[in-house]
Structure formats: C-alpha cells, structure tokens
Image (tube, rainbow, N blue to C red):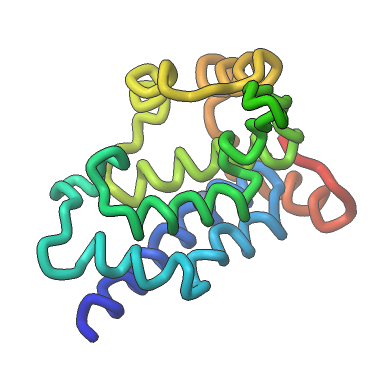
Length: 179
Ligand SMILES: [Zn+2]
C-alpha cells in the first residue's frame, strides 16, 4: 500500500510542476488534464511496481532506462505514449509496410511537451531543460518543424515572466492562445 501512496505523491507533484509551466504558456486545460492516463489501471499498477515496488529499478535521481525495464512497464509506457499527444512518439506513424513516418506535432501538443520537460526537471531538482535536451535530443524522432520550434524555445525564449503569464492566462481563458 505504501508504494501506491509514494507513487500518488510522485504523480501529483509532477502534475503540479507541469501545471505551473503550462499556465506560463497559457495552456490551462492541458495543464489540468496532463498525464491523467497515469491513473488508469493499465499505467498505474506497472508504474507503482517499477517506481516504488520491491526491487524497483529506478535510480535515485528519478531517471530510468526503458530498455532495462520489465515488460509490464514497457506496456504501460507504450499505453501512455499512445494516449497522450504531448509525447513525440504519439506523432510517429508506422505505415502498413513497416516504414516510419514522423508527423509535425500540433502547436498545443509540442507546447505541452516542453512544459512536461520543464516541469519534470524542476520536480526532480534538474531545472536546466536545455542541458537535458542537449543530452537527450539524439534519442528523439522529431519532425524538423517540431525540432525547430522546440530549439527556438529552448535557446531563445526562456520561460515567461509573471506579468506576461497573467496576460497569457487571460488570453487562454478567452481562446486558444499558447506562447
Ligand atoms: Zn506524459
């Protein structure tokens, strides 16, 4: 039972940090519903086992290597990717002949992905998103348009200031604005 509470705390903390980043970009609804599929049984139980169960293999900093994870966790992670378009994998399409085609992420989805990276990093005490991206970018299969946008944001557009944030939230409440 303890592992369930530990994991609940972890998910709520993650959601809180991502919500804060989403609000900075005017992504109110996405910030609220971010990662809700983690509460489905398909994801919840394997995640609890892998993160906090006996012999959980996550390292202390919170990172994990999916290639070394047990299959039930891989299934849960796959479920998560397919249910949530803020993961770039959602936009990778396999043709009937097995070929891989990468589609450009929608503006809202890519903005939520950036908020996910920023929020997850802050929650784990690793706030340098650009450094994280630089280490991991070669592992991501991003459409060139998505990559250009992400890199522009990471290099040239640091998170918004509080005053701008209020304006964005206001605009977000009225319509579909995202930074
Ligand atoms: Zn997610």
